[in-house]
Image 1: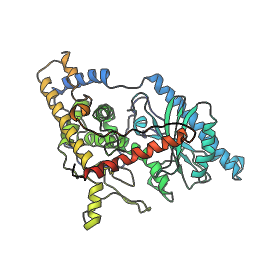
Image 2 (image 1 turned 60 degrees about the vertical axis):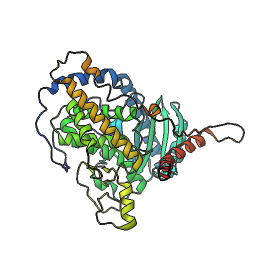
Image 3 (image 1 turned 180 degrees about the vertical axis):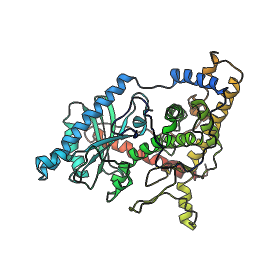
Length: 438
């Protein structure tokens, strides 16, 4: 059975019957199941997750699916309208198609209640990015279920974000050099990137990476999901979940957890979770966390490589951007943690070390105990305890942005764009302050 299509989110974890066409780079550390005594930890982790790790209800998930079906209809109608406006016959415009793919946490079914949906609209060559940000944007603005629509056309990867029936959606655009984008089109094939521009390549990167991660962990997908849910909550509660600010984002956690699942292919969730923290607390960075060997199809895109033969300023720049290389598996491979700087890197390492010690305490507490004992599930609380940042530091810098209003005030959209710009520069501010003798 093929992996689930990224335009069709699944309610239950899919079962793959064949191996991934891409082989893992690292050999497994262990190929046996965990010792029997880990059964007690598995039971207590399940109890803890039921109480402390939120999951979306089936009702909310069905609502998201209805919203994405509605958005797909709007997108395909827009593709048809653009094709007709550019002189195509009704028959050719009807078969032009258009698809919407999802990626990230929603695609993997690990999103928390209320999380946004990362998506990309894929259109044939007749539909340009200018069309997307003009006529498709107008179609969304006219839709009765759409609110809070904002677009950032000048970003490296141009994006629109909006709420559709209360569901927040981030939407990118990809233009393929094809006359039509039928249901059968396979964006996982590397040849799909032939002759596309950089914005399209980066837009397709999300679902392509997500799909390949699925294929690489399909042998133990349910355990992957459980560990990833806890890891994401841990990152958010400990203040580490922000790629924009130089910490770790969703794709980083996806890759790191997938790597642990590769190294322990028959392990259960509690065992994998503890290994996740133990191994990355001691990881020899900048040795890369990498799932499969990068390939270069010579299509004009930069592909991550260790670059051991650089010298001088080029070597220093490469080292600065590769303190903690977490490499995406799909072509073109890239370091998804390039925003990590020396100061956030130290925080991340300290937090992994703290989490490793918390897991050791949990393991020790469970030794010789019975799964029915009530305090065992509570023993995981320390791992996910919220950050004590404000208790730990007496002095810190806060950045407040105020929209004062008045006749000369910016529109809400301009203010939102300004907030996004400022938040994207905070990482640079930290880097500059870090070099001062404070």
